[in-house]
Each structure stands twice: as C-alpha cells, then as structure tokens.
Length: 167
Image (cartoon, rainbow, N blue to C red; front, side, top):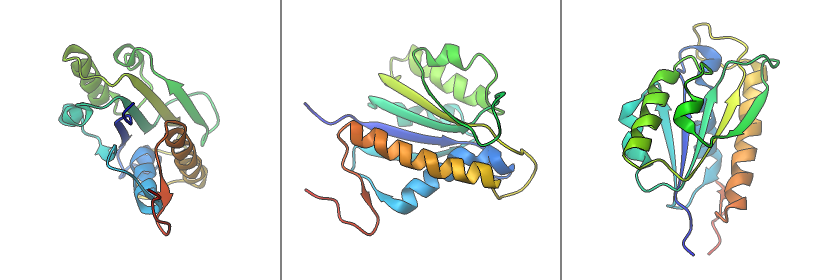
C-alpha cells in the first residue's frame, strides 16, 4: 500500500492577531519538523480558489484556522468533515467564503481529498496586530503536536529538525 499524500493547510490573516492562527501553526510545524515529500504544508493566508491546485492528488487534508464558537478563547476543536462544502455554509470563520468556494469547486471537479479534518481555534482577539494572544499561541503549540500525532498515526515518518529522518 502506498503512503497517503497529505496537505496541511493553514489559513487566516496574520495582520488580525489570532485570525492568523492557522498560518502561524503551519509556520511552527515547518520550523520544528522535517516532513517527507508526501506531506505538503501550505500557508494559505486568506486565499480561496487560488489554493485549488494544492488539493490535486491529495488523499488527506488537515485545515488549521481560527473559528467562531461559544467555547472559551484558546479552545481547540478538531472536526472530521464528512461534507466540507456543506460544513462551511455555516459561518465559522471570518474569511470562510474563499475556503468554502475552494472546497465546493474541488467537490465538483472530483479533486476533494478523501479525508478532511479541521483544527479550529477560538480566537481571543481579531484586532489589528501581528502577535497571537497567549491563549491562542498555546493552542497553536497544542495543534502542532496533535497534527504530528495524526501524521504518525497515518504512518508518516516525521522528525524534529535537529533529528534525521530514519530510513
């Protein structure tokens, strides 16, 4: 059996504090870990349809984003998306329109990955600024560990930057 091809997509606007949590999570993963070629990490920013080509040939996709919710700020929610275009019809993210369009187009062109999960972080603030709040910065750390655990569960060999990837 071949190894699954995986996209880790961090989305958000880094100019609006905690709204950039998804992008910051991808940056943290790239900084700390070495990934095999089957894993692609993408800073999706606030792009929408422009991200469609990254889905080509992917079997798994992990989306990381700030989401709207009633839980306390800094809460991490992991959701498996059985019907991603329908899921994003409800307003859960400040910039979800682009993500919803991308996933809908991928579904129409049969390029939607087989398995899609979302790590959502409840923001503290969406005010202008480059820094994450303490609660969201801790959540980004937690998500990075959870994503690595998810990848290892899929059989992906991930190593810390100072280590070497074993053959």
